[in-house]
Length: 506
Picture (spheres, rainbow, N blue to C red):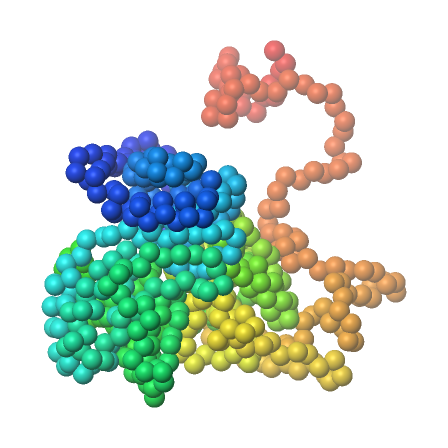
């Protein structure tokens, strides 16, 4: 835990960075690997003049060469975006707007969260995968040819899904292969594999599911819970997001790097209970910190306003923080915060806060803690857009009845064991009017008292910073102080003077 709050200065000096140089035959594969021909067609057909190229850290060594190839073919000015403000899976529209780019080309893994500001092209790349070995692993995991299975995959393996579908669908008639799709309301394009039938629907009665940039169909009379999930890719945030969302489905996976398939044995129930513990902490909290974890995902401002409104109606206080990439030392600076809520893309929302000084919850978990009309059913929502009005999981907050007495419910905290009162009317509503402060009677006079949670927390601390002592210290002329650095001032140790002796002007 100590290393989480402060790192060793020597570790920075001895840290090494491995950089691979693109030479030889690999350089010739860049055109195909990064789909430069399709990218140039996207830029030229739309007559873009300034293009932002966003690369994740692991692909930055190839960025200069890819940029040069695009500039030579399109005559457009390119800008390389590295070290994104938040997760590299999200499109960094803010950085692109700094250079006034006309569009963005996003390379590498992506969460496919919808964007609104600039035209966008996804280039996932083509990670190597043995399709034959993947099909063999699938047959070993699902020996019954009538198994109902939905195939999900990391976006970097989308180039091989068409070949895999041809190997499986003749043998497994109930296998559904998902397709990558972007939100219709955003101006984004995908480079689809020609072997994938993007309009394949077995029956008009089939129900189309669209979630996390994936689209698939389930047969009439069936639900997603009746299917098993087969995931292609490494263990990571994408798989965790799928397993938490469809937690009633049995998951198995194939790792293209190790060429092995396995049944996912992650205990989802245990993970859900950890999240439920965070919900209980949110119920006990009186001060909530809203962390802005994205500036590119559509409707992030709307969910922030909704969270602020929910926190206020629940009788809690909220503060908003925009601090870029989140880490333990940053959040440890704000001791008055009881719990944080992270507004981010679905893959980055499930933050493991075990090392953090305060728990970090998702917008869905905060709603469970504050909105008594939303009940814990085992369903889990990682996409905050589903919580907005019109979303698939929207539950309205109960409006207070001004004519009735404020309704209060009392329950017991499962963490502290103390009684807590849950009110449906915010503390600022008095006699049907909303006030930012309250009137209290003191010494037979009316005084205005504005409650500030942060100030109250500061007043209760044993150390409150430097004491100004205004009017209590005499006024003296300015004198020359110590010279040097704190570890060794120039006057220290001169003439073997006692440390308590005041320094004289030289």
